[in-house]
Each structure stands twice: as structure tokens, then as C-alpha cells.
Length: 307
Image: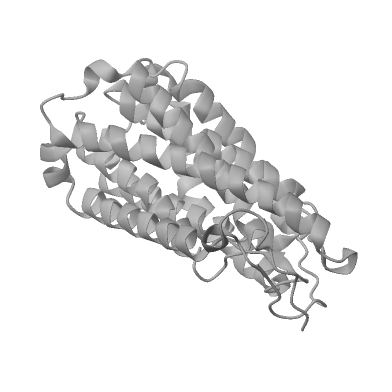
């Protein structure tokens, strides 16, 4: 194995991402046709749901699978759908499997929890709406399809195809910690919806509590940051997280009257999402600058191909 030249001249040594060589450079790392096809097929459903939930969050009784109240819950779900559409768009066009692989188990888990929530709260849905049957078809099949695609394509995964830029240890630790906190929040919302209703900063029902639990389960993607620290593997997932967090912050401003100002969680929610958004921007800009420097200093044969 070869090791890349030190990046010590870029910024503070303690904050510099290292370039590492792991595994074999002979792997294919392909995105299979089946993966591209499934990704492309999912995108229209996500865009359609986003187009209903964010522009018209007060009209879900007529346009969606169930009447989501208040509007904050509808817009949070819509934000996730747009982030998901972007992820699958990138997956359909990705050149290398490892650049999108980390998102598939996370999406499958989210979809599985949404399917379980649908069964548990079946009576809350509007069975006469076409959107309901599209919802059922999507969430009773997507977990298996997405996870199956992941398992099938994972045979193409390689640890590295040469010298790769890695996320710094401190940043990876923060990402893992944030992911762990999100997963704990997910478990609380999904398993104890009645308790969540009592403490949440905006009004919830059992169904919306479990829906939010499924959304917070997306934090599973952050837990993989310690094992897979290549920036090329994290770049798209960070972009997706940025889209979702930004849209949720916009939704919070639009639905600010729905929050309980006397609830400490209201302020923790605002501070937490603002800090998360700022952290995503700082990490992304920092890593992109390092990636440009790394590309100039790394021999041509070991450069990372574009994502």
C-alpha cells in the first residue's frame, strides 16, 4: 500500500483530514442497473409527496393519505421526502457504489418503520383517498426492495480504490454522537408515542409521533461515519442532511405559531437544528476545500474520481 503525502500545510494539524489507503484498488465499485432502476422509480413518488406536503400542508385531508395536523408535522415529512428524492437522484447517476451505499440501509429502516406505523394506526388513514393506497403500496414494498437492492449491490463495495480523503476523527465522533442521539429520539417517539405527545414542542398524535420516530431513525446514517470515513462516501449523505435540515428550519419559521414557547424542548429543538445546520455547512465547506488541495497533491493514479 502507498500512503498519501501529508496534508499538514492546510490549516491546523489537529483539524486536517487525512488521506488513507484501505483495501484493494482492484474492486469494481459499480452501481448496478437494478439499483439505478429502483432509485429512478422511487423519485416521482417522493417528489409528488413533497409537492403536496410543503406547499399545501393545511390540505392533507383532501390530498394525502391522512389528515396531518399541525402543519409542522406535514412539512417535516415533506422535507424528508425532498431529501430522499435528491438522494435517489444521485444514486441513479452515481459512478461508484460506495458513494451512495450508506444511504440504502437507512432508507430501508425509515420505510420499514413507516410501514409498521401504518399498520398500527390503520384507522387514522383516509381509505377513500387514492393517496392512501399509493402510500400502502409504497411502504409495504419499499423496505424489502431497497434493502434487497443494497444487499445485491453490496458485492461491488470496496473499502477504497486508492488514496482517499477521510473525515477528521473529531468530526466523525460528532457525527456518530449526533446519529446516536437521533436514534434514541427515534426509539422514544416510536415506542412511547403517548409520552412523546406529552413533551413534544408541537402537538402530536400517536401516528405523527411514530412518523417522526421513523424520520429520526435516519440518524442511523451517522453511525456509519466511524467505520466509513471517506469523504467521497459521506459527501452525498451530507448534502441530503443539509437539504432536510434547511427545509425543517424553514418549516419551523412558517409554523412558529404551532410551537409551545413555554416548553424547553421548543428552544432545544431550535438550537439543535440551527447548530446541526451550521455544522453541516462548516463540515461541507471544510472538506471540499481539503478535497481540492488533496487532489492537487495526490498522484494522478490515486485520485478519487468525481462523485
